[in-house]
Length: 148
Image (cartoon, helix red, strand yellow):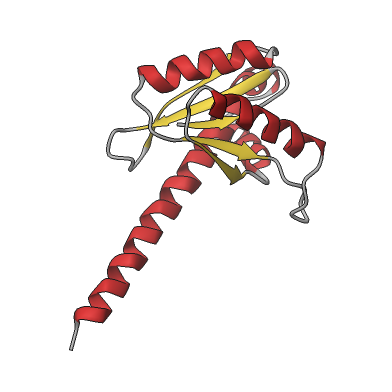
């Protein structure tokens, strides 16, 4: 499960059970961090998630700003609830989500209501691809060790 945490709206994307593709995507319109954490905890448990990938809004130069600090605090709040949370670099996901939606004719309020869910799906896709690549690299390394 991936989350694009926002001040007002938060995008959520959930993978299928095989962790191969992004399935359900939606937006939670909740500005209160405590209430949002309650909702995410319920989604996490209800969907049987084992990891919550939380988008980390780093500055373009890789440093942490105020948004990343808020995200770190939110991560701690979720972890206190027993959720397994992983921070994931989300630079440019909102920009990419906007470009994707613009390409499908979504503009204005229609685009605003979907952009966070699309950004969460991009975060999740990046994480799942990284997991897949890591597994393949590990398998290749094991094969090289066993080959004569």
